[in-house]
Image (spheres, one colour):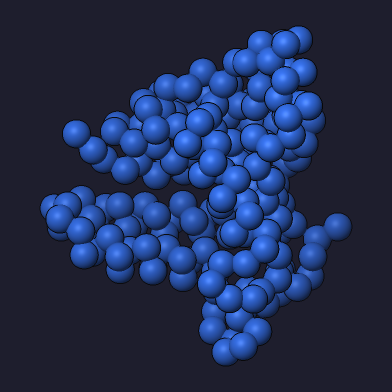
Length: 186
């Protein structure tokens, strides 16, 4: 069932009715990015990419989809933090945004690791929880985490949109992500 409160109106702050959307979040991030020491051409490219990629997430949410976030180690913590901010609140009260971190169910994590292997961890959860209209969001600082890549590939095979957060060059995530935000570093 599609939540009509998300489909037909902006995601708003109850107190001051300012629009809170992925697009506005992208603009906020872009403004902060402008203050970094990165070359201006790279800043412009990243800002455009961020707005476009967050727009894909927003359109999925507004159509009744959910975000499935996953990663390993610090990226798992990032997935959990992002999901919590979207479900509960980010800076202001607003309607909940459907997001689930696939890194929190210890029974599922340990059963999969034991029975199918750690590389199948996210792939199996995407298979069970993912539906067309959802977005699978893989997070990998190297872009080469086998279980993250397998999760993204399974999502693509099932018709989900795929997004990634990575560092460096993006590693092996580019071919399996509809949207990929890469934070360049040396």
